[in-house]
Amino acid sequence: MYEKMENVFVLDHPLLKHKISRLRDKETGTNEFRSIVGEIALLMGYEALRDLPTEEIEVETPVEVCMTPVISGRKLAIVPILRAGLGMVSGILSLVPAAKVGHIGLFRDEETHEPHEYYCKLPGALEERIITVVDPMLATGGSAVGAVSLIKEKGGRNIKFMSILAAPEGIERFHAAHPDVQLYVAQVDRGLNDDAYICPGLGDAGDRIFGTES
Image 1 (cartoon, rainbow, N blue to C red):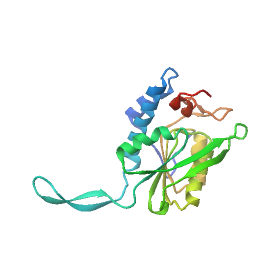
Image 2: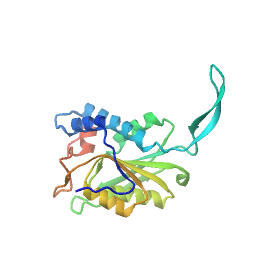
Image 3: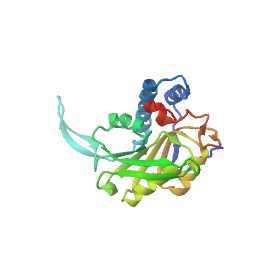
C-alpha cells in the first residue's frame, strides 16, 4: 500500500484518470497510445513545472508599456529514459519548446531486473538547469534511481522525475535513494508481479508506444 511521502506528488485529475484508462485497454492501438502518452505528459508537465523561476521584462502592448514575467535562467532540460521515455518528450516540449533534450539508455536484466547503462548524452551546464527525467513506468525503481544517480554524477542538482504509472515498491526505492528529487506520478497501481511488471498496469509501454513485440 502506498503511503504519502515528502516530494512525492500523485496528480489526481479526472482527465489523467480517463486517459490512463485508455492506455490500460489492450485494444488501444499504437497511434492512439502514443498520442495519449504525449497528452498525459503535457498535463503532468503543467503541474510539475509550476515552480519554474521567472523574471520581469519590459514589453510594449498595443495599449502601453508594462513589466511582465518570463521564464528565467538556463533552459529546461528534458531527459527521457530510453526508449519508452521518448513518448513523453513531445508533451513537455509543447509547453517549453526551447527546452534542451538529453537521453539516457538503460536496459533491464531479465533475471535480476536491475538496470544497465548503455547510452548517456546530456546537455551542458546541468548544474544550472532544472532537469526533468521522464519514463512512463516506475516499476522496481531501478532505472529511475540509476538515471538520476547518473545525472547527479554529471553535475545535475535541480531534478524532477515524471512517471505515468508507478508501483509502491518503485516509489519507496526511488524516494529512499533520492529524497531530494520531486517525483510526479499520475497513478499508483497495486504492485509488481513475479516478472516485475506493474499490475494492473498497461503492459510494456515501450512496445505499445513504438508498435513492437515483447
